[in-house]
Length: 358
Image 1 (cartoon, rainbow, N blue to C red):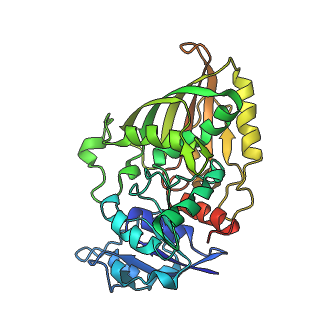
Image 2: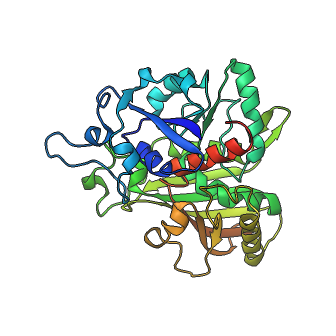
């Protein structure tokens, strides 16, 4: 068993890590850490409101027994040399210093944006850009580290990049226009989204989100050549919104391809890609990586968020677009707190473990 630590364990993403690593066949949580406010408390006491006694456990599943009585340490008390891997769910403002400290000694898989846009840091989605893993070796050499930082993409980027991989490879995607309808949980829990802001409403602007999607999609789908990533040569334009949905991001996507392609060919390409995706057989990999639903009313967050425990990206309403000369359009759904966050990070760790990086 590989020894792992979770940093930022009391937050929304940290709690997802706790659940994703419960009874994991390869990784054992040996230490958990959070802010000074939570340090030296048992996990169950740290998430308990001192006034009301209410547990601030935000997941549908119960708190795993293994973590209830684990004592939370301060981040500074973590000795990285005691671990094979560290999962970081720290906010981006603090993440850079913390992740740098740990990556000098041990691999760090992060959900923060602190390192995403560095030239020697890949943004990895298992099954989508596995060849970019080689950049981790360059990162270690450049920085003189024993470990590395491997960040996940923004959760909005995840579903888009997954659906675009077969389109780009088979049909030469050139332009993308996307509008996201993002769940409230994507804003975190503290402070999160105010009920007064989101009830009976759509918030049409999410700071920095659109730039993240544009930059990350190009980097993820780019080619790893001569020790660096050459971003994919396609234009990405998006509008990101927040909607009154608890979990799961829905996106409408319009794509212009290099040549004319019919919807049935795109569906086949997506299904073939899913059937042969590289992560098949890993403990956290879904039975269906990418699902194409023929029902014109799907995908829907309430109906599709739990498919394969939130690890499947669902596509529906795939049809020809008449604005682009060679246009395809579809709706996708991706679970922002599962595949787009902690459980996706665990899947990445599994892939890196199998490839000898952990």
